[in-house]
Length: 93
Image 1 (cartoon, rainbow, N blue to C red):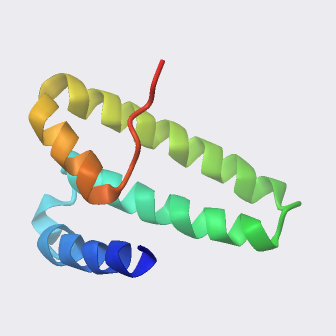
Image 2: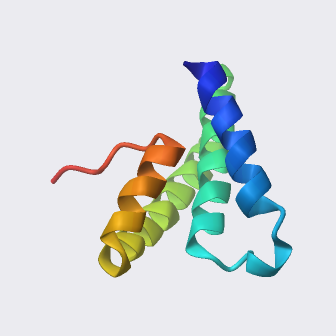
């Protein structure tokens, strides 16, 4: 399963990341935040008492959540597809 996610990220990165003129897109920002979150999560697995990294992770999670909320309000169909591509669960309230 991990290998499938990595190959998915390479496909997304080729289609989204390398388009520098579109770096302001919500999808581009969400992809970058998701990569940062995964890196910080693995870092915190080894360094449990790194409180500054925990604070940074919480800030990035909040930013990503706000962008996901915006995307879900503007285009629900695109939001669902993008959530499936990134492998993010929908937030339940």
